[in-house]
Image 1 (cartoon, rainbow, N blue to C red):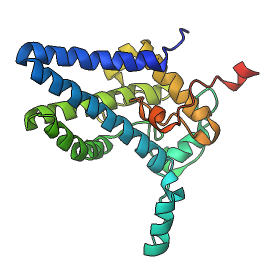
Image 2 (tube, helix red, strand yellow; image 1 turned 30 degrees about the vertical axis):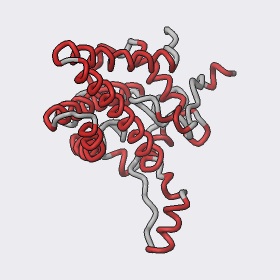
Image 3 (spheres, rainbow, N blue to C red; image 1 turned 90 degrees about the vertical axis):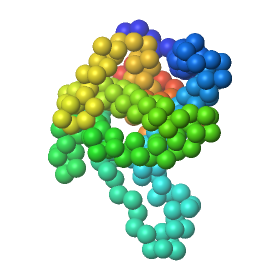
Image 4 (cartoon, helix red, strand yellow; image 1 turned 60 degrees about the vertical axis):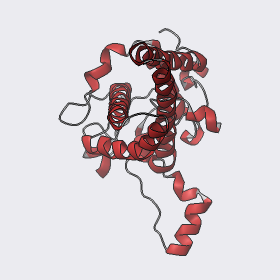
Length: 241
């Protein structure tokens, strides 16, 4: 199996894609539109990467319960701790080779994809979450409402398509069906590309890291590098032995 590209190469590729799109906009609408497109798209990517990081670390891993702010709010307002949505249980049944040691669990057993895929309702929530942050940013960058909406929906779809193609498949689960969410076959032809190999190894590192602390980004690598939680590639235990 070919080695995945480095983080630097992945970031350079992402920058290249943003540059290519901005160049096309510039060719059609001029230099100012090109610069607005580049800054807007770069900011949109940062927003999505940071949101993916925060949701994964503090909601899915319920780390918010351990923060000093939540402890203060819990004591002051008598809040109850956040409960697992099934992600913690997903980690418990994931073996070192990423296959699943399926255990009886009321949350996971009710889901064909055992907590690894996004339903349409989850994609809707994510769209709202990113929208309230991206619209102001893109407005500041000079984007119209129509252009902002197209950029937002394209970004949300790409994120979901990457997740659905990557995550269930790497845990030996079926590709999500169209009726259940963005289909897992949507980007299946790209699984052997360097970008997907990078994401695959990156997420393996998340599962193998002590306490699953690290590599919280799954589809939009960046925030882990910003916040010092990137742990790189962690090889299988059998390979280390």
